[in-house]
Image (cartoon, rainbow, N blue to C red; front, side, top):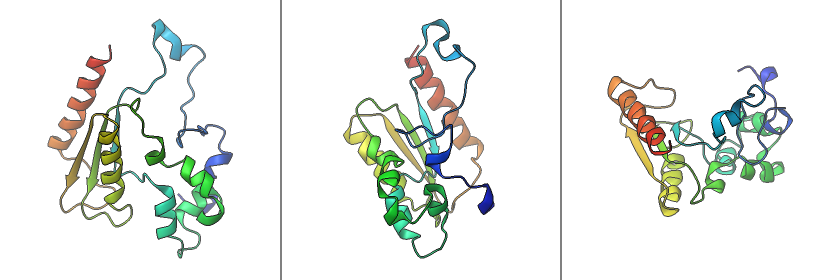
Length: 162
């Protein structure tokens, strides 16, 4: 996105204040349809930034960095927001199962982000699998075998939670 299209996370009307993500608006009552809850049942994350404090500090010399634009200012001035928006700070035994896929040659978001998240999830006894993809950086397309693993992951987790 170009710089003028960026809006800070805290200013977005659809930003979720506790999960650091964007909520999709649903028609009234749809989430309660047939007694279903709005709880996330499974997550597949591709090359995710999971610690915005660490990533923001890594890119602190690039002004303005994407992290600065996302948070609305320099990382050191936005630490509470960066911590709140970082998935690694929200792992609990109640987290949904995760499938994380990350390129081993990613220079935009270091693979350590995915490794740390997978480790924290496993420590919390949450099913988590990290697939590392050799010779891939950031923004790669899944090959048919990887895509099949994603499909299987969701089928398995949606079947379990019926």
